Amino acid sequence: MERRVAVLGAGKIGRAFIGALARNSAEVIATARSEETLKEAARLGARATRDNRRAVLESDIVVISVKPYHFPQLVREVGVGAWEGKLVISVMAGVRLSTLQAVLDGAEVYRAMPNLNAYVGLSSTAVAGNNDRPRSDEVERLLGLLGRVYWVPEEYLDVWTGLAGSGPAFIAEIIDALAMGAVAAGLSRELAYRAVLDVLEGTAKLLSTRVGVHPAQLRDEVATPAGTTIRGLMVLESEGVKAALMKVVEEAARRSHEIGLEVDERVRAELGLALARVEKQK
Image 1 (tube, rainbow, N blue to C red):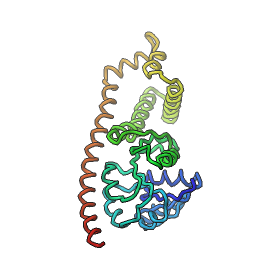
Image 2 (cartoon, rainbow, N blue to C red):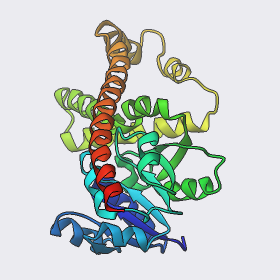
Image 3 (tube, rainbow, N blue to C red):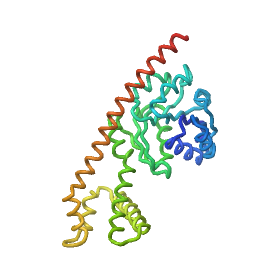
Image 4 (spheres, rainbow, N blue to C red):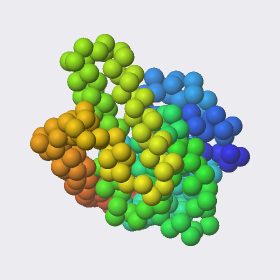
């Protein structure tokens, strides 16, 4: 990428952006609050600074990856006029597009929800915003450095958070459970984990290449009559595992929505005060 990108907040997702951008020869300016995080951002290839306003002014594209509760302070630090003409991608949880557009005056704003798999270029990232706007292709190219990109209406970002955002944790728990079952049956811990990871990788690849094939079809291919697989599937059914996994995503999505309402309300309240002060200074 030829454009200069500012990453405001070099936490986990921020560092994934920095690493991906640096590997693609982009010029990156990163900001953070702690000296340790600044050093890590510099190690990944960014020009590190605590000056958020300078980072925004010197960049074409701005990725906001600070914690939502730090956003009002960031807006105050950057000040009036700095956002004009910028392409802004927010990965903050809960802060709605309407709020972002109200305070980032003159910017073209999008919301994105990557996940931790961005570290290895395999994030499933949802992005909300008007994909007919002039710079939406740039948004897709930038987020594509982290993995696959899907355009969704903003109201579905909470569901996406419950599924893809929290998904790595849920999958990790399932991997651990399957491996521990093998350990209980006598397999070494190391071999059990490798086997589960191989099965997961292979199954995902198989399903992704067989377009239109429902996962249940693959399940039925493996589950031969009176065999080992059908016996295991009976346990999954009797223990209500499928229903539990459905509820896991549903509850995570519901909590994401609750947090979003809380965060957006708090941010709006704080930014209302900040904007009032800015108006008085003009």
